Image: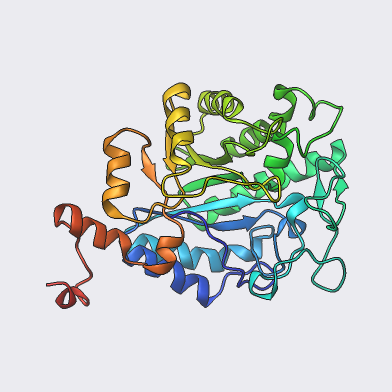
Length: 334
């Protein structure tokens, strides 16, 4: 299960909605569940209703989710995130616009003082000391995630959020050691990885989600994604979760079934790393073909699991008749 925000938390705390939501997908047969973007600090939330892991008090409610996910057969994962300049937004069902004022708004931060879109808030550009503080926040968040029992820790470096903002020359105009060259632009992500790895044991797996391209000239691109993926593998990152876009508004993308799969396939081949594919994968046979054709190693399901929490069980039943439905539901599938 790919991470998908639920925008249903209060002060970052998980609640009954999250518990039921993730437990249902575990019962539905997901092999692993990556919990939605969970903010490493309050100003890193996309909205005021995002999940958080910036304080120890968050751990107990998250642990309830982890315990239930494991009980019903899935591996629990969490995506650690900071929204950067795309933070401080209204809830999607209330328009989703960036908030400029009010109790539920705050000043976003970013690598450079560049707004995401016209009319949006110009973020505060992080200085070196502030970057170090954010790195420490990622480390502490990972420590809390381990205490909560998550076995997969995924770093969110995609979709135009803070780490992606550092990666891309479109959003990173810095002239210090965090900007300019490819080596400088990837520095922040590598430092996040280096800060998190010591907190993990052999029972944990570190994954990174990236956007393989900005879909614009002179932006972050596939060639750089291949190079980055190889470096991350050498550092100990186990899986590259490959998506695209999100850092530049109003981009025309060739959206259709499997439209992001070629990026995962090329990164898998050229970086020789384990990759997961995402993006309009909605059918069992479609997903199975991607695996048998060696275009990726893992299938990340997103919105299809919002439509059908039992997709994985149904797919297993369809493909090889091995789907084991809960005993309580079995009579419905005979």
